[in-house]
Length: 371
DNA sequence: AAGTCGGGGGC
DNA sequence: GCCCCAGACTT
Image (cartoon, rainbow, N blue to C red; front, side):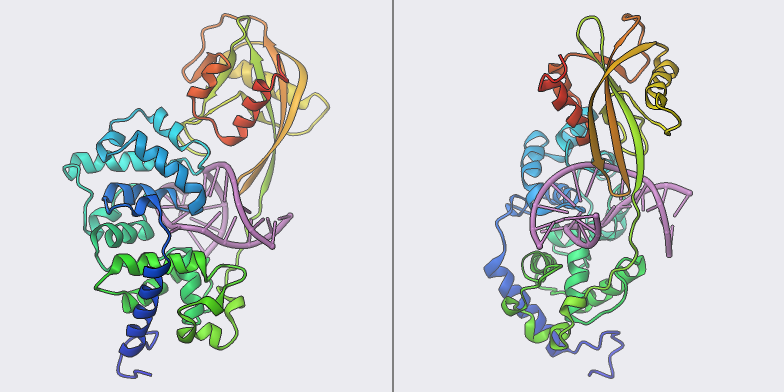
């Protein structure tokens, strides 16, 4: 114990030195080859960190390659059409991430001459860049010793340092940032932060940590006390609300389909969808009446819903959609559509960004269940 | 501090 | 089914 230190973790210099050596040696020998590790281009590092928020590495890899191929530089993304940007993000989820990213790279073009800023204050002020992402970019792209505390780091450090605070509480992240400031290598902050996450992904995994393969085993207080399986402590469950939805595959006289662009805020902002509405079960016609009423209110047309074309379930983090899909026709086929409504052919559907829930409806159409 | 915001993979 | 994932934003 270093009683003279004001360290809340009582980490003496010898422990810190061993920690860094064990971790960085292991990382040097075991790090994965990943597309965003090809160079230190701050823009590419930034894109990767946004994509990786709440998203697995294996999921991100193909998206990262395609996205950086479509938008190779920060300027390319800044001046791109938002619809094409959303299309490149289609299926990845949390779509506000990429809308915020585009807002932020525009800000970098206008206020920072197109160069990603390298100070904590400036970079943390960018849209969509929180404490984790700021630290990740500063350390990985610029070699600045800032903590980058994500879920991996909290899991790894909760075990190694035996921290039993609830990691679902925002203030607990601050605690781990203090720990990282004591532990981080000032010679190679980039490798240190990436190594912590790599260890969490490959060895110190959530359910069955591979402690016998772990380079940090002799330094791990959790392993020492046999508590690695009880950590990290994470409380607070989220309940999922169920919503009954009615959606329409509505064909005009020319065989085109009616689609709608969602509003610019909230769930699936600016994504396209088939006309749909939530309904409450009041009687046997409730859902058809709700969908008809929705279309009448929004585009002022009457529709005939002919037959049920399918049922889709789709689960979000906090919401579950139970969607009945109806096939129907417009009674007056040539009305003037409001903004954000369009008639498109089956082939043209591919040009618009749809959430996965509505891609399932496209699949119904293309499998010719609907003809 | 608690809700909102996607989607997929592993068990 | 449940949990987790290189989290941030809003209220």
